[in-house]
Image (cartoon, rainbow, N blue to C red):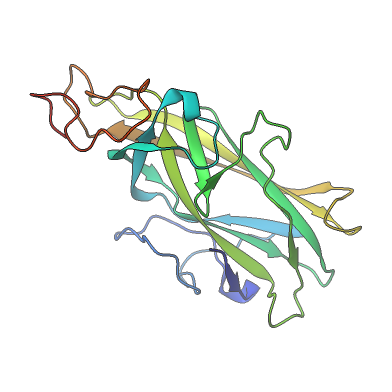
Length: 217
């Protein structure tokens, strides 16, 4: 569920010593603010975050079956703030694209296929810097999943790029890009052993924390 924030409380995240699982309404005051002229994206700091496994055939579904709840961990952001940064009200939409195949990002628990009809753009939100209810910023939780085996020995490095667009003509556009931000991230597998993860990505049912006898999470 998204949260309404005031733009003055939203800041650029830097590395924290303690992972933040639940996003709060006020971000740390020691990080630097980032806001473009028309709109801005603020991505939370990379923190140790678990990700789950789903079967490959459901990789582009909105709500697929989780076959392993904790498949691995990564250095990943756990939230994103979308802000209006001037006195003009408008509709905002964004998408995130990553460079790792068979890895999906969820916003408030939902995945949007970057290769689908919407090109991965999230539903538009209305932001008004002068409205105390709608607020100048909205915060959204980020979660992650994989639909293919990952390495347990070496971390996999990749990047995520967020693109923000604004419309002054309504929630259906026309759209103009106002901000873009890229973050370097990494993941590693924690289940199984170096020989394999003991996970059958062709099987779309829960495989628990022990997938194959002799291979534990």
